[in-house]
Image (cartoon, rainbow, N blue to C red; front, side, top):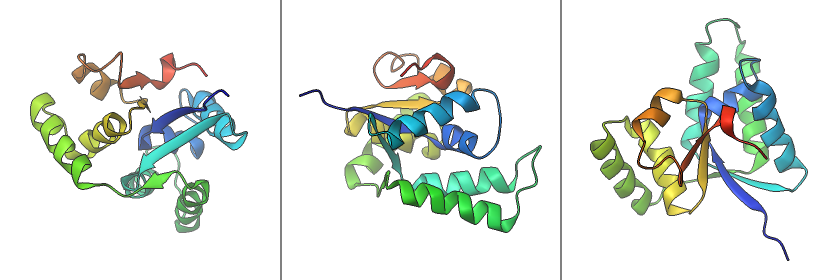
Amino acid sequence: MLERKVKLVDASVAVKWFATKKYSEKALKIRDTYFNGDLELLAPDLIYYEVANALRFHRKIKFSKDDIVNAINLIKLLHITCPLSKLDWLKASELSLDFNISMYDAIYIAFAINRECRLVTSDEKLYNKLDKLQDNVIVLLKDYSI
């Protein structure tokens, strides 16, 4: 029996489910592949706050309070989120210090490492800071193929 692929998505990908941006079609394909049962998606529960904030302060689209709440409710309905464990926090702290990245970003990376899956992100600045982890842990949305 074939195992389903497991991928972790960060807020930079999830925001593209609600706002048409570069590579939105790839982000939507990931979500649709999950809906079809061919992919397992994960995300730390931090994703709720980051997506809500990104939609609230979106540069081009003025999202209403209902739009923001509906987006978060859709993410909740996906059942992809998990709370952070002590091991996630320890690894995130280590990564934040080692790679000089924010704790927000480090949480996604730690989450992926601890669950032995790859993080799909559209954050090129983050990706470029993590050159030692690129092949095993993180992949850019633009380079990701299902």
